[in-house]
Length: 252
Ligand SMILES: Nc1ncnc2c1ncn2[C@@H]1O[C@H](COP(=O)(O)OP(=O)(O)OP(=O)(O)O)[C@@H](O)[C@H]1O
Image (cartoon, rainbow, N blue to C red):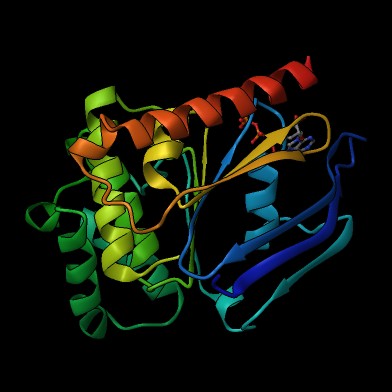
């Protein structure tokens, strides 16, 4: 089993409003895994991502990193692509490098590489309004990948897309993960998406982000079109569905 990249130890999060989103959460994110957090709305999935990213601080417990440098280079993709509307695709992807102090000339090869990986090379000079929803999300993914992050956090990135686009982006994310040997934590409500993308599914429940189940998936499985119709895939979906029903029932 791969070593943890980042670990949550008895983590809790209570907001100033008094809402406790998480309490006593223990979770390892292992190097190279595609970990999916699956659970009913409001169970604390996004809060876990925000705590790992450092966008929010835990109220209790601790978050430890195996490599302290890794925490400084995290990519985050949200459901909304949040592109700068006045900037080209190229300049949107350049943004994190520019903020890190990289000059435009030195950044060009990295931006071109990121755009090629998401299939947007031909659209480098396009503005966001000229892109489809799927292309906007590809641009957001390129922007997150351009710094070669040690960890990619994805918060329901494909939830607003149509089914065909979503499947295509799922396929492409699998390829990206393999090519980059990335570590990904992915939040979704979709059982199919979690079964297709993950090497491990964590099922969370309300209240307070309780982890109610964990489904390990063979990382060696080839995630292609045949996988989507395979008995193994159906079995993973069935187990995830059962765990989610349990989680939702417990939340009711
Ligand atoms: N900034 C905040 N202030 C107050 N409460 C918050 C804040 N952020 C989240 N919460 C609350 O914490 C709980 C967990 O929210 P979170 O967004 O982590 O859940 P989630 O599982 O990601 O939900 P969804 O699937 O709907 O996005 C919810 O009750 C939510 O209302």
